[in-house]
Length: 240
Image (cartoon, rainbow, N blue to C red; front, side, top):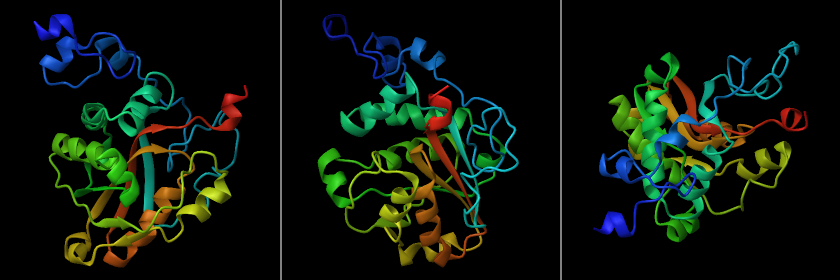
């Protein structure tokens, strides 16, 4: 009766997602699941950034990434309905959307992702944690870890709050998160010599990933591979 009067809504389009919710698949309708846009090919083999025509001799997105960061991948492109799902999780309290996102990332995982030993969520600030009630990356990472059958390792903490990355250019993004993360020493033994999967909701320039990897370095991991639900569209593609 409740489902009939107040049917569960889809976090992507606002339509009905009753069947999916009752099946335990999260508040995302079948239509939105099928419409998640893939990252357009060709892409950089290391960071996964779209290369447009593919004529560039090298990728500038990851040219200065540390060697420890083996690569970055994304399940889809940050366009509708992926954008709406990210916003629902991040700004509107739809925690169930994060469960779906993590499960979908596990379903789309490639060999580099599946070779990881454990899953590490990118931490958020205490202010955001109080406001949202959860860390969106941790929600995604928990579902992803369950889907991959890997342990979840919350071994990073974020220092303070420096404001959102959304309106910043690449150089400002890098400066904004430089030194923002610290390794939790009690996890050092579980990080040493392991292949880590660093998880976030969205990857844009990789500035947050690089800062997180620098913090993980002290634990002595074998490598770090980043994996996000969505990747933003480069400005060069948006203008064409």
